[in-house]
Amino acid sequence: EFSRAVQHEAGRIRESRPTAVNLSWGVDRVLARFLVETDVTSAKTTALDEARAIADEDTRCCHAIGENGATLLPDRCTVLTHCNAGALACSSWGTALGVIRSAVEEGKKVSVIACETRPLLQGARLTAWELARDGIDVTVITDSTAAHLMRTGKIDAVIVGADRITRDAVFNKIGTYMHAVCARHHSIPFYVAAPLSTFDATRTEHEVTIEERGRDELAIVGNRILIPDGVPVVNYAFDATPMKLVSAIITEQGVVRPPFDINTLLSRPEPKNKP
Image 1 (cartoon, rainbow, N blue to C red):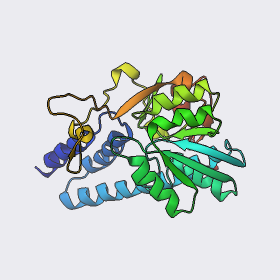
Image 2 (image 1 turned 90 degrees about the vertical axis):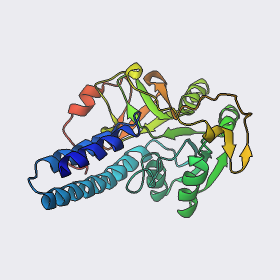
Image 3 (image 1 turned 45 degrees about the horizontal axis):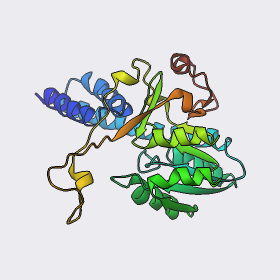
């Protein structure tokens, strides 16, 4: 009975974010360890130990991603990022923000332009808070300002995280594709920082469900109604960026450049000098 209840709740967690893949990866990994136990006490202990192990591995993974990605940034640069791919999205350090943190730690002068990331403002609320807390120069812009800054030469690189990477596309917060298109047009490198647990070699873009969220996220802010009653909205939480727009993917095993072969990447042995 306890096992059935836990599996039911695990399913609810797994299905809560259909676009993201490493949430289900983590749930399934803990559940696999849980299911081999034969009593409730051992099952609880094993599940918690496995969850903590994943958190510890994630910390080491993010630091490795940061170190690998820092090599891509010049000694002085301005980086555009979108949504939050920092310590608040991981166990610590972060993926896209981990690259920035590692570069700053190495002595590079990095300024960050954080897109506000409508409609939930993860960039303005979370990314800006993380970087300001760390003393890293950060400025918040509206999402629609990014193209103007690229055109006027004020962005040197774009670094984003990822919720899922299939054979043909990178899924990330809605608006990422727009930044990738603009970056390519203006010859600005577009980097994706993500752990191997984000890779999905079994699916293509069109086989992935893109999460849609509720109307009120767009229509209501506080006590203000921003959209007239009866007017529908489209509120996708993520979009897909074709691989051909990605300059490089930064993983814990190193920097991968086109052509991207996910199956080969996932079958590589882990480098001995990396966690």
